[in-house]
Length: 363
Ligand code: NAI
Ligand code: MG
Image 1 (cartoon, rainbow, N blue to C red):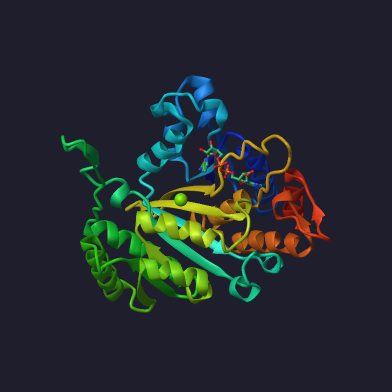
Image 2: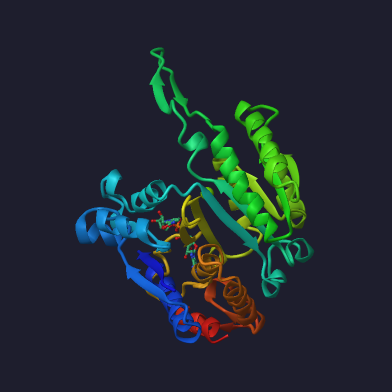
């Protein structure tokens, strides 16, 4: 087999976290003959410094051709003044847009070893394992009209438009149902059909998709505001949550806080399956940013990046056993009392970024 990975480490702690994933790729190639071919590219400030763009056309081509893209993080004070079109974030937005990554997967997992030190009640978070599936390319962030108009009487009007078409709701709910089948087989769809027409359609289309193709999966519906409350009150009632771009943005940040540090949270963004091969375009990245405050100090927690690579093994390469083992290794080093600074607590052993990567790789 050949499996092509494009690594886009980016800025700040991005390259430091990516270095730990390189160790895992090497081990998988050496011991499992995994056949990963690694390509390299520049994104964000690093790309801007090299050629004045947040991602070059050449690297964009590589991203479109790769089996999967691993993305570190972009941005930092160094590029605060650059033009809007070439700011570091523009590289990520271009990747999402051109790869048509419409499904954003944000797991919220609470590792057993960290449940006790959570700021939330231990019984609420212990054993938590939920997956939020957020629609990423539609809804109010992209709908037209989108503008500020001058009303002429000293008043202005800001307009954003929530738009969803049937096919967009069908494909995102399809992803959620498929994923649920590999987990606890439950989907909760969240919208606000009580006050939004797009919410009425959302609920209808999710129910129809369920009935047509996924009747074996348990489906419930919840108003998104009530969903936010339930996420905080008793998150373990959920398995997969599917929701739109705006609600998904907020609910996934709420869920993130159930799990501890930003340094622990992975994500995946998936496109539609290719009609011929069934393969999906996919990009995997930690939820955190480039953390300029700790960059270059060996303080970054590489677990978010490593767990993103585990998602890559699972979803892009169907390497389920390897993904399971990698996730077990993360839990294992935490059980052994290994911590990076961001998750350090009394009596534990503090490791650098590279030491944490080594510990997980060894496990
Ligand atoms: P951030 O996520 O970079 O950092 C927030 C806080 O969390 C910082 O105190 C940081 O030290 C800590 N932190 C983050 N990741 C960590 C890790 N792996 N280990 C230990 N501690 C960690 O968000 P912030 O500070 O708002 O943004 C910094 C830069 O990153 C900005 O330029 C921002 O635009 C960019 N950014 C990029 C993202 C991306 O590439 N997808 C996402 C979010 C922000
Ligand atoms: Mg957000």
